[in-house]
Amino acid sequence: MIDTLRQYLSVSFVQYALIVGVLIALCSSLLGVTLVLKRFSFIGDGLSHVAFGAMAVAGVLHLTNDMLFVLPLTVLCAILLLRTGQHTNINGDAAIAMISVGALAMGYLLLNLFSASSNLSGDVCSTLFGSTSILTLTKAEVWLSAGLSCAVVVIFILFYNKIFAVTFDEDFARASGTRAEAYNLLIAAVIAVIIVLAMNLVGSLLISALIIFPAMSAMRLFRSFRSVTICSAALSVSCALLGILISILGSTPVGSTIVAVDIAAFFIFSILSKLKRKVG
Image (tube, rainbow, N blue to C red; front, top):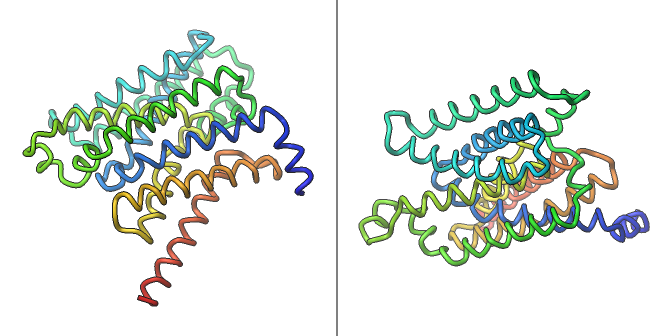
């Protein structure tokens, strides 16, 4: 097995998959803690369905680079979701449900009506649950993913204090002069970028797991925001690496394997949390 793994790791497409997978996992974990604490976890589901609908439209239009269409549209819908929840009679959960289900239904309808693909069910299944496209990335796609991932990390580091303030006490942050709405919009836009990046890794239906499980696992053992964020990032990267390697060696679906490893890590951390309380 070690020889087989060493042989795979010498191949460029496996190296590309590991690089992109690690970067996506890192970005997902950074803002996952914020979304869980703000009780806005399901925005990942909503935006992933929007991204699916956008990808369907891009496929119907036969766009060669669907990222240029899907990314701006998903960011726009993220801002719309936040605005709708704050400034209308529709609450946040209802807005997410309406937009996500509507985008999912319209995307599948468009694919059925206009798609020229001979394997529509396979295309839809791979988009929803992840595909092997993470193992067929070109160098340009790797650079694009790396660039967007680095931008997400830099934004999180630069605005860490503001994100922390908005996460824990939005009213106090607003009273102290922080533009809470602007930073909420920033968080929503960054989450939209992460969602689009993660589509090829775990699929649109499994993206929330990539965001939520590492954060929830870290919260089992740690209490401070910084400790939880660091632990969540380390755990997410480790699970992504392990999941991709298991997927390659076992020929299992990449996205589902990563999520399965995240679930196993959550149970391990839950057990450690109980042991910690007994010892303490």
